Image (tube, rainbow, N blue to C red):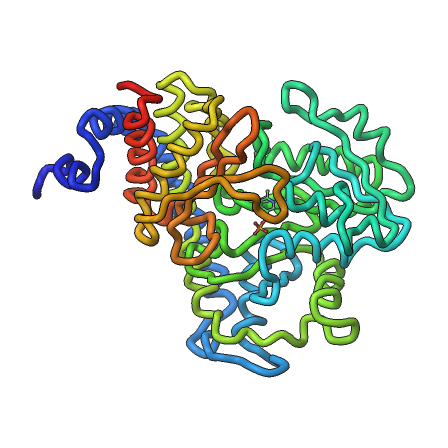
Length: 427
Ligand SMILES: *Cc1c(COP(=O)(O)O)cnc(C)c1O
C-alpha cells in the first residue's frame, strides 16, 4: 500500500499536520477501545429489538394515503420503544426535525395555565421561540403556558436549592437538555440526569420529565429513559438516524404522553393511526441499525479534535481526558478568523460540496450570524461531519459528526491544515 501520507498530501494536507495528528491519535487507542465496547453493546441492543419485533421485508414497503395499518411505521415505533425501554414511541417523517419533535412533545402535554421548567439553564436556541422566551408567533407563551428557568451553578452543576423553590402546583413539565448545544457548559451524563429526575420527582411525583436527547443517543449504554425520564426526544438527522434517515424525529416514552403527541401531530381523534411512511422506512431501520457504530465514529472524531486543539493551547469542552456524554466538541478560538478557517477546512474534507466556501450567514432561529460547514448527503444532517460557528464571543466552533472514523479524522486534519495555512497555528 502507498504510504498514507502520500494520499493525505494529494488531498492538500501537509506532512507536519498528519504527523501531529497521528501522534495524538496513537495516544488515544485505549479510549477508542472503550468506545468500541459501548457501540458493541448498543449494536446488540438495536438488533435484539429488531428481532423481538420480527422486522421483515414487508416493513420496508411504500405506504401512502392515510396510512392506516402501516406495518413498517408501527413496527419501527415498537423497535424504538424497546431500544429506549419505554412503553411507546412516535417515529415519523412527518416530524420534520428535532425542534419540531420537542415542540410537539411540549405542546401536546402542556395546557393553558401550566408551567414549564428548565432546571438546567437556557435551552437550545431554537427552543427559545417554541417556548416564547423570545416572543414568537404560535409559542407556548401565546397559549398561556408560562416558563421558568433555573441556571446551573458556576461549576456547571445543578442548583438544587433553587430548583426546589421553582417547583409549585402549576409546574407540569420539566425539560432537561442532555447536550450542551451551543453553550460551553458541560453536557450531562445519563447518571446525572437520573439524579436530577429523582430529586424533582421526590418534590412532585406527577411532574413530567422530558429529556432533549439530541446528540446523546448511543453515547452510553443507557439512555435517560432508563433513569426515569418520561419522554426522550430527538432528531433522526442526528445519532439515531445513522446518517441514512432523510428526515424525521422521535419521541419515546410513557404511553399516555406519546398518545397526546400523536393527537397533536395529526389530529384529535386520529392520533397515531394515520400518517403514511411514504417509502422512508428502510432508511429509518437501516439508519437505526448503523447508528451505534456511526455514533462511535463521531465520538472518536470529537476526542481527536479535543486532544489536538487542547495540545495547541485552545480551550476545549469537553477537555481531552473527560468522559463523553454527547458527540459535540466545542473549541474556543477567541477570534472569528480561526472559526472561519476551521469551518472551511471541515467543508473542504467533505465528500459532497467540498469545493464550496462557507461564509457566515444570518440563519433563522439563531440570534447571530453563523458559519456552517457541511458537505452532507442529507441536507443539514449533523450526524454527518459538520461544524457550526456562531460569529459572536467567545468565538467557539461546535464540531460534530462523521459517519466513518477515517472521514472524521480527515476533517479534523483538514481544519488544522487551514489554520496552519492562515498563519493562525504553527506546528
Ligand atoms: C439539534 C438540537 C436541537 C434541534 O434539532 P433540529 O433538528 O436542528 O431542529 C434541539 N436540541 C439540541 C440539544 C440539539 O442539539
